[in-house]
Length: 64
Image 1 (cartoon, rainbow, N blue to C red):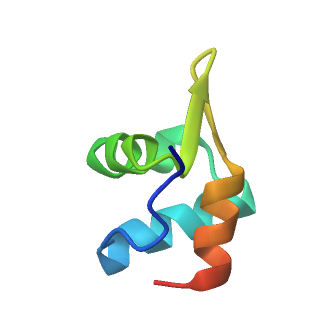
Image 2: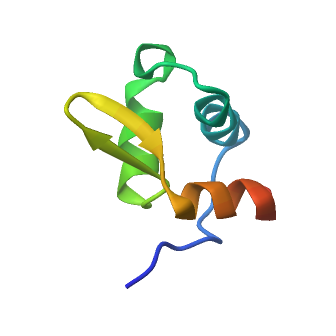
């Protein structure tokens, strides 16, 4: 099952996703945003670091 590319995001959550695209570290990301973006499949956490997934990149292309 793929990520929901139409899931509602707050303006701040979308900004967090955009910041991750720029390379912002996980420590700059509010915990609630990190958890939601992971649950939606937009970011992945590996070895304590988070990174944008293909679904996250697609969501940024589609927009808020």
